[in-house]
Image 1: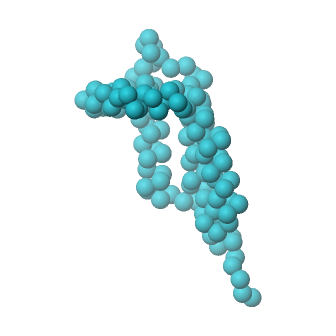
Image 2: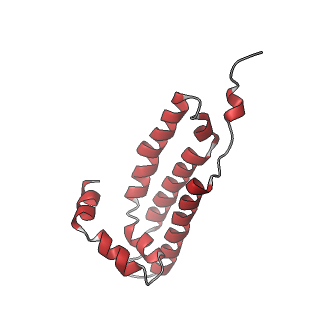
Image 3: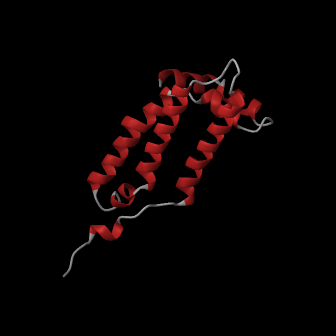
Length: 129
């Protein structure tokens, strides 16, 4: 019997260049949430929930069998894009993660990142988003 067997392509993908940044962002956010706990800039549980819900959806889109299936089926590939654009990205943006992520970084790095975030093109981009 000839032909393609789509189930041969269905697998979880733990490629380090995809999974690594997702895990790193999750850890940085957790560190920032911990550091901000009880402060005037303290995040709300709702924001944490939104952030991690978006991050989980992003991870599922790019690490789950849907991603590997998307290499052989355009429909799966487009569903992957829709999950990222319509669900994951809005959840992450709605969580307003900038301050929490900034405080998750090592203290010596924060001023440099903060100065980048204050640059006019970056501020205008966030405002537009």
